[in-house]
Length: 302
Image (cartoon, rainbow, N blue to C red; front, side):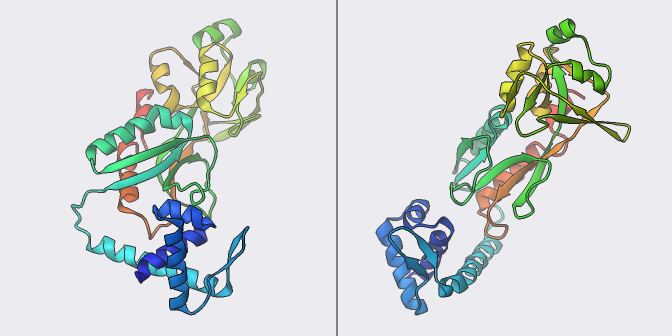
């Protein structure tokens, strides 16, 4: 029996909750997954799963074995990484997810440059505006933009997401230019479902002013709000990675430019710090070098 493969199968089944999901993740037949589990149980001398027609659950022996099996795999990965030629190029396929707006505006181009640099790599991109379960959806790396991540997540910050209040010149010509935060109460403020839905925090000279806002358009995706702003619908708080070219060309105008709004981090979230494939580590390094703490889109608007 290939015990390392059997251990890998066991961990995958435990993480994914079914033999079928594990077989798909491992590109292995369900029958082969079942065979490796049986051989592992024969080697351990104990059953690791309770099996019924509807569910799969760890036995007490399985729970005790799982953490040790994870350690074995992590040690193997550490040894492989330690012995690897530092000049080895990343290879293989990586499955990533991120928000639609960041994916379309910046990540797609970054992915194209990455696979051109490393011809042995391939990237599957899943653009969605919700947090995903990395294990259940077989995601290697999730790009998340957040003010604060859950403490239970394993993540690396590789850039920053700043935002500005902006509107079209036509909207401001018709409705006037806000000069003070409280002036926003007289304007149609277009809001994001998850960021500043009813309250914007504006900071100036170290003092933060909370401002209640509202309007007739709200959306769960920044690109949709951007299109509404460009259609002269109102004022929105939008990420600079999305609006900086439009501001530079004069198609949008920054509102209350002396006030700053809360910034967020751009993170790569993954499942294991120690058992990280070379391609995941390489791709994160690539993103950090490409974007960094002062990304190009912020430099464009000063």
